[in-house]
Length: 203
Image (tube, rainbow, N blue to C red):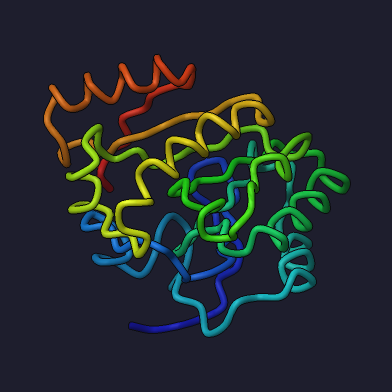
């Protein structure tokens, strides 16, 4: 495993922010189990976590007109650095006025010991939460969160809460990791929550 300081990297027409390698989960299908890079990046394993100032300065290297969206997602759970994430989001909004998305496991409020959803109001346009499975027991088997039984209900609670503050909330599963029947159950969960459902490809 090689390490570097890839802070920003391109995937399709979006610019991704790699804030941390810390994560509360050890998902069986996690990309970082198989590879070191995603999109146009070198290794996403960080030598150390970049400071807010380093992240903000990194944006100067990119023509922001080329990107549709700034996405907080790297080889770790971005809400592990929620205060820094919000500070960077304010910078991006003020300087570049770009749409922003957070890809998250939905355990950020549990991990931070506070309700982080209100912090996103007026800054984050989309929150994409990994639902992964409609079954709490299977969730534990697949996601392997350090929070154990607390993780699944906390993720659903976060989805309910964050939709109060963020225009678009999406819950996702990974294709080929669950059955079509389970996908239909996930769709019903999303309907009950009043959020979108997305089946994302296994890359």
